[in-house]
Amino acid sequence: MANYRSPVVSALGQRLTQFSADFAAKQSVLKDKGNITLRVSDIYNTLQFNFNAYGPGFESLARNKRESRIVYLGFTYRFGNAGDTPRSKRKDEQPDDAGGRGCE
Image 1: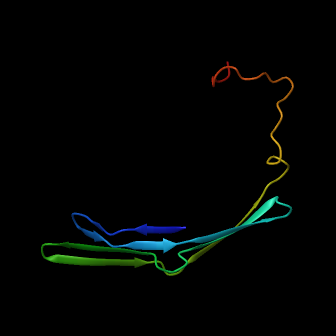
Image 2: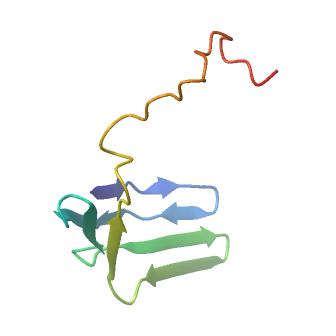
Image 3: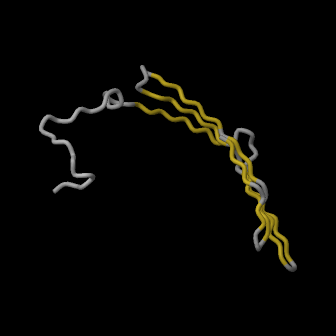
């Protein structure tokens, strides 16, 4: 994923260009019951939040940058067979012909 924000001029100054790119990958494991996900934010180390404020008699330059990239590692696991087949209705359950009405 890539994110680009162009410079914007406001009444107090200008927000400068912002650019960042993230990378993510997902791998199925444990016979497709689990997933391992890896994400790295700001892979090019370019994300900055810069703003120039100015007016009569003053100028302020704000430069903000993260100290480092962030790495996310996740694991998900699906218990049972909830995702394999649609749940069948119970025998005593009647079809809902109420058009979205709640319980009566």
